[in-house]
Length: 595
Image 1 (tube, rainbow, N blue to C red):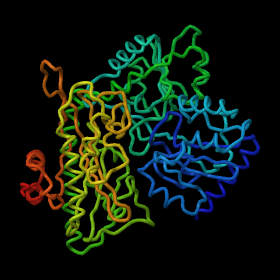
Image 2: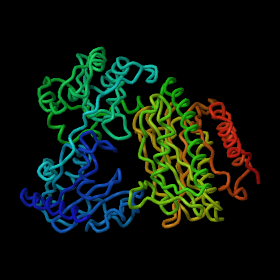
Image 3: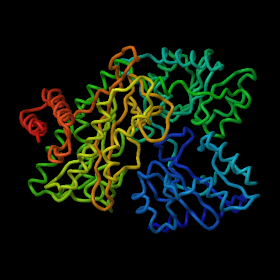
Image 4: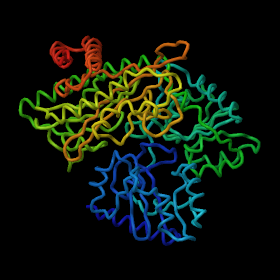
């Protein structure tokens, strides 16, 4: 079965030879620099068989290599087996960067080929500079895929819908005005936006073009004289056309940006967020470019009161759905029924979809039993699909897109008698989760300054995890949202009131089990005094942690109190929405934790 990937790489090498390309780089990307992409743009997956959301394929005349991060080391090892593609574990000390590998392995005078419409301008320009210093050329118009992929999926054609202002909390006209004011402060009079979630946010539109991400395939030009949405007409309805017209937004075909941008007035100043724009777009704009930061990312990350209240309501519905799910899981296992990882993921979607405000899952569920829980972004397939049994732990990372909010929660539960090591590992993870979730910090604090709080107890035991501790979360938008994060890598964006971020430390023992404990938290004011303004986190997620996995002998009184207070909140908020059986189950799962 995997011979097809060998054949595809062989076909790519023929195209490379025909165009005098020594190295081809194929990222996991689209013209909008998206993390999650539509099937039409899944070129790297089609070429390699690796299905992770992050990773880059590099093909030379005699080697094929795939760089991906720690979330996917185990998954990539399995999926690349038999493809002749070598896994490069990105982030490890002995793994060279893609750029370093290329300059070390090809001769001066050679050319590296990329498709400029799916490569970030900032990354491409950085590579070009390094390559040039070694006499290597970067060709950003290498795109042989249309010649090779005969049954390639078409561009998405899902209809767009209007995101009701009662959920959005602000009109599109108001958002456009705010954006233009910020654009002017950066010395420009218009802006061109590629990022799909930014377009969806500013225009109050949503769609189903990308699985689990309610965005529409489009580009957006914003100016005082009127804006233009580049979107295929088949995606519009009379209602959405009127909505756009009311915002003074015209429409043009998706593929018409070149002619439009190239013909803008010579004296126009167009703000471009270079890291979030494809390298091939820059020549269309030429010397009209004002390089700056899109203001939409920060506007979008700070939720207004309507969005915050909607998210709180979405968390209640999500918690109720999970109560139903875990009761169902326990009943089936108790009755001796077989229950697989895929079935659990399907059941989670089924219970969530009982809500009228459910739109989609917010990402494909990560349902990992036993050793599969140690694969950070595991996705069960027909070949890997494990059956749950009472002799190990089960990790479920899942979430939903509701019209009034986005959820993302991970719980690790014991399906039988947990070992002392499992309990200790779980408790160390939870101690970090509690330390981060209960921290008070001064305004201006960045996520990198808080990240060690979640890792400290694991580090003391010689344990760690390689993924970030927290990512921003959209509002009925992408579950991974910039600009804020909580991770070891430096990020200049501070945590601000209104931002929703995940809190998800973990530990993963390869071949045994994985543990991750995730809540979403809202940054809110704590207090102000002569030392300045201080902030804290409000926990939004509502579902209990497994009481059977706590080792209270290594917990402080304050940590035990945190668990009990959290469980009291979960029980108080969910119980009015449960029947008697469900309420009794929740009562038991939120019983007081004691030594």
